[in-house]
Image (tube, rainbow, N blue to C red):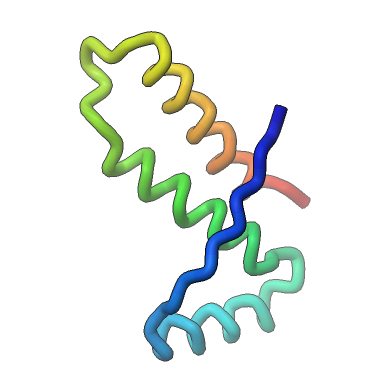
Length: 75
């Protein structure tokens, strides 16, 4: 089962302009896909130490990795 969470966030104007430019030049990407890829990569890089993690944490890591890879390679 997949749950979606809406996020309302303010971002710096420079980042917003860069995102708009990226989306304009990459029509196969949309804002949701960019945010899913960015957030999942952040969580993968900055998540808790994976040594000796619980099965729940391990499942969460694998799920996050799946979201990241799906965002990168969806067509």
